[in-house]
Image (cartoon, rainbow, N blue to C red):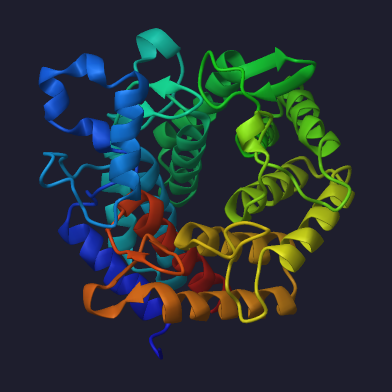
Length: 387
């Protein structure tokens, strides 16, 4: 397919704007109006099965089950980051204006400050997962970090100090609410009150704390970020890999979480001007390139299985190859990854990407946060860098 990444990003943005950046999410099944009448069924096995049914079905059941299209704070953060990349590339103020409108909406979507005391964000749905149940709006570390990054980057281009202050305050939430010492580990938890250790969540927390430490010259935050990052580095495999986390069902190695880990470590290195994680980054990046891609540019989901093909893996690959690898070879390979994703996962007549493709089926449901927001951001980033 001969369509280039600039054209695709433009069409994807237009399509998303027409929907007011609202859409479905793989995990939004519990937003069904059915639960307005039976809210007690959200928790436990029924809620988990309902969530997984909506996530795994290749048929979009949401209109039938009265699940509305909505904005997701993380998805909006990703769109803002993409809009700012397009603004840097083109100097077209429309991108900046749209980013500002979305940022102002994010400010209204913060999790309850009377409870959490600092700036933080969660998902727009109740989330029933194997490890935990998270009510709508309860903050999580990943959403908070991507929103904080978006607000901070916007503050640099708009000179709006409110965005900067809120982004910095998010690090206070991470430090004061999410820092854990459990099972002889020190780490940042995914959600408040949860003691499950997950590498990408903890490392991204450390990365944002390190970034804020560099902005504010906070030596305590610098030391804590390094301490937490060292925890994950100490558990890196001899081959450079990381399993997802500490629980028995977390013992898998996948593409986009490995990419998260590497990008987060690179951010810590750059923010704190430290070389102490260079070996871990080098070893991890070599493993990442060798085991999580096919030679034709296909981004693998697992180290042992290319399927499902998923644009989440592709999108993170672009950031990891360009930000961590940095060489001309890595940037050229990123282009190959993009082209392979266009050839295998792009739906041209809908100007969107599929959610996932397996050997036997394709899920074409339009997931705004999981798929389209990530694609727009990574393509806009790649277009700006390579231009």
